[in-house]
Every structure is written in C-alpha cells, then in structure tokens.
Length: 423
Image 1 (cartoon, rainbow, N blue to C red):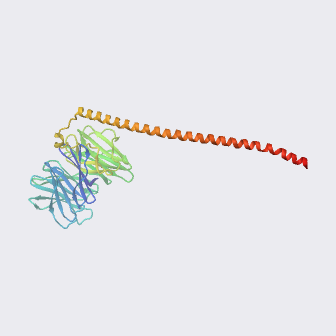
Image 2: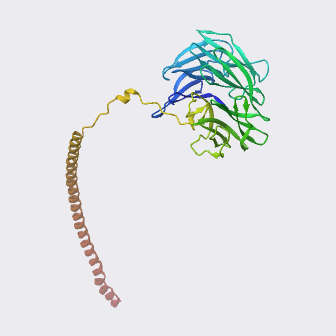
Image 3: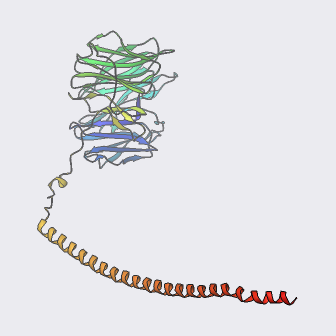
C-alpha cells in the first residue's frame, strides 16, 4: 500500500520533486543537474498525513496541525511557499487523508471521517470557495484500507475517480464530476476470496489496469485484471510465492509494466498489447532499494510514463527508484555567465619565472649543504686521525708492557737455583 507520508510530483517538463514527512516536519527535495538537492523544510509541527497536487503552474500542499487545523501552502517555484489557514476546529485530524483538487475559483476536497460503526468510515466531499466552506456531501460509507484509506486520481480537469473498499475483500470504483457536481454509481472492480494486502491501479484512455496481491493461508498470489467500459477481464495469476508485496502497475511508452517483490526480490512482467497477454516473469536486475516503499505519484500521465505510484528507498531519504527523473535546468544566470579564457602567454612566463626562482633557491641550498658536508667531513677526518694517533700510542705502550712481562721471569731463575745449592 502507499505510504501516506511520502509523495512524488512529476511536472509537465518531467522534473521530479519529493515531499515527505519526518519528525513533525514536511520537507521537499528536487532533482537538479547536480543530483538531489538538500531537504527544504516547508511546514513544521504538523500531522503526518498531507495532500499534494499541482494546478496550472502552482503547487499546493494541504496539511493539518492535528486538532482540526487545516493549512494550505502554495508555491510557483517550489522554493518560496505561502501559508494560509483554511480551517480551525476541534476534531483530531492526525490520520485523516485529504485529496485536494484545485480549480479556477475553488478547492475541492475529499476526505474521510469515522462513523458509529467500527472499521467503517464516511467518504465526504466539500468545497472551499471565496474563503468559505460549502455544505459537505457524503459520497459513501466504506472500509478503509491499510495505510491509505482510499485512492483517488484526477482523470481530467473536472473528472476524478475514487477507489475504496465497499466490502472486506471488495474494491470498488466511483467516478465523479466536479462541475457540475455529479456522482456516478459504484462499480465493484476486485472481489477476492481472501484478503488482498496490496493493490496498484493505473488508468489509460481505454482501460483500468489493476495489479493486486491476495494473501492466502500459506501462499500469496500476484493477480492482474483490467476493466474496459463495463467489462472486467478474468483474473490472471502472474506469480505465486510465500511472501509477495509492493505491487506496482504503470504504463511506459505504450507498454503495461507490472512489478512486485517476492521475498524481497524485485520481479517484472511486461505486456506489449495493453494487458491482453504478458511475457515471462523476470527478475528485475537494475538498481533497486533494499527497503522498498510506495508513495503516491502525481502528474505522471503522459505517453512516456503513466503511473499513480512510485517506488522509494526508505533507507536513503525516500529517493525514487525505477523511474528516471529529468534534472532541473541550470539557472539562467549561471548559463549566461561568460567563461573566462586564460591568457596562456602570461601563464607560461609566470611559470618560467617560478621555475627559475625555484632552481636558484635549490642551488643556494645545495651549495650550503655542500659546505656543511665538507665541514662535517673535515671534523670527522680530524677525529679519526686523532683516534688513530691515540690508538698507535696505546699499541706502543701495550707492546712495551708486554716486553717487560716477558723479561722479568728470566732474571729470577738463577737466584732461586743458587738458593737451592746453598741449602
């Protein structure tokens, strides 16, 4: 399911923006020619859930202060944001999901409220026009899904479609016109015997493509279906494993591409004919986040990429994966700034002078070192000669002592012999 704290925005020119909630603040990052920019704090001390959209050239961010306080931030350049309060109430809105739809003169908002029944909420539509809230309308009662209670997507300027659970294992769709306010009927899309744990839906001009995961007692199945006008295709089981998650359906260059993770490994399956048939399931071999999440993707509805969700890396700042963003252009001031041309003749002359000065310094240092070495050699030579003279004197003295020791016993022998004769 989508993580309600992370959202991605793709502009008409292909630029990517990342919005996320962290530690009570909402941050924004953009992909530029130097990579992802540093996080910019947009709002602080807010509730985790927020809504993001872009109308014309203005981006809008609807967030809650927690106790029924709603604020709207707007920006035309994603750097300077203007904030204004929209509602001050007493009801806790920490986990309320809002779907914001700006128009020329109003802000259309869809949200949910708890009812008297457990696990049953009320889906509500209202309009904020000329600084005033109009009467809210109850769209339907539904059973909220995990993380993201309901899904919504804008199909055109005044046309939207809602996806929500009308039963425990039943996902339904309901179309709606903003002006004039017209509510379509409820159409069941997915009905499964076991609970579905994840779902990804993408719309094109002809079909609604649905990829979902059904968790049984021992196995999980990855299933694909599509809806064309009033007909719904037979469920097609693409994969079966012990643990599947993070399913993602999107259209890229006319192809229907389905992805999911099986035991943490990314898998991919492609259809060349609009979902009528699929090629073999293959292991996705490109770079993929180790801890993957899904966030809502807005503004991706062109021919090259049509998607309502985006993979993100939960370990590296929620940066997007699989989809390649286009970098922001360089600032105009930086583009027009003339590049200085170096004067190579002056540089060469300066380099020669530097080398000459360095050689002179080295020569002077070498001469100084030569004199020092010569003086040291002379001192060593004098010390060696002195030591050799002292050693010669010691040898001579030693020789004299040795000669004395040799002659002394010879003179004493006659005296000893004479003494014996006298005795």
